[in-house]
Each structure stands twice: as C-alpha cells, then as structure tokens.
Length: 191
Image (cartoon, rainbow, N blue to C red; front, side):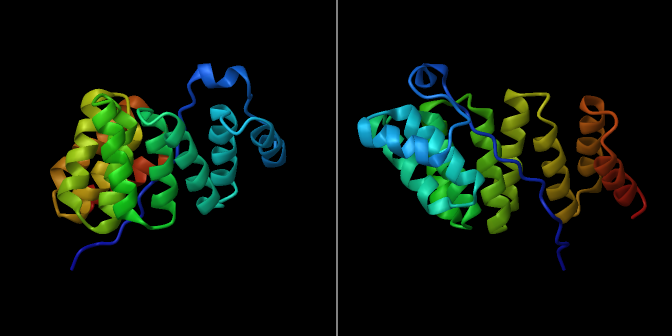
C-alpha cells in the first residue's frame, strides 16, 4: 500500500518586462478587459488578466487568456507554463503536461516548467517521471527548495527513505528554519 502525501504546490507566473510597457500588473480584470476591447492584440493585458483569473480560481478564463497570448506569440514558453498551471489546477494533467512539454521544448533550461510538469506527473501517480523532472529542476536551480521537498515526498511514497532524508536535508541547507520540512525529516527518521 502506497502512502498518500500532500504535495506542496505553488504556482509561479513569469511575466516578461517588455509586455509590461502597455499594461501593468495590479489592475482589475475589468480594466484588462477594457484594454483588450480597445486593443485586441495587447499581449500584456491577456497575460495579466489570465493571471488575475488564475488567482481567482477561474481556470477556464485563465486558460482562454493564456491561449490568446500563445496565439499572438507562439514561441513564448512562459505562456505555456502558465496555461499548464491552470490545466493542472483543473486536474487536467494531460493538457498540463503537454503545455509544460512545449515550454521545455522552447526553453530547455526552464527549471520551473520541469518542476510544474513534475507536479502533474505526481498527481497522475507517475512517480518515476515526477522524480526525474524534480531532479532536472534542481540540476538547473540548485536552490529550488520546493523541488527538493516534493522529490523527498515522492521518495517517501516509493519507499526510498535515504533519498527522502537527503532531499529534506538539502531543503534545510537552503531554508534552515523550514518547520514543515523538519517535520518531514523527523517522520522519515522515525520509520
């Protein structure tokens, strides 16, 4: 019987500064909609409105806006990453993985896309693929405490106690006062 552990998921959005020239974050959805009505090709407005929708857990509208960004700039990995996060939040893991795949194809060093794809694989129960993606994320960003922590959780699930301990210790080297990870470490060591 496999243990069920809760994964620590945080959605991070990347917004490239050039899109911020006409539209700034912090505006309301209604204001972004007004901007889009005046200029239907305003990438920044779609991007920021998509983020606002995501934050309101309106994932369908977030997906729609990120899709518009992709339509306007097909080679923009961040838009695929953001849309993948929205799909993941809807538990549509196959579409999420497809978007993270595209983000990684466009930018093979996009550590966040590897981490996000790992969450989708983990949610599908494809732990070995998730571990491989978390491993790539920490290879690209050795300070990614979330990737270490979640890879540690996966190692716990598959029964690899030593690797779990190693990952939790890595988190504590990055964030020494992380009480949640200290609890993970104590739990694994007491098994």
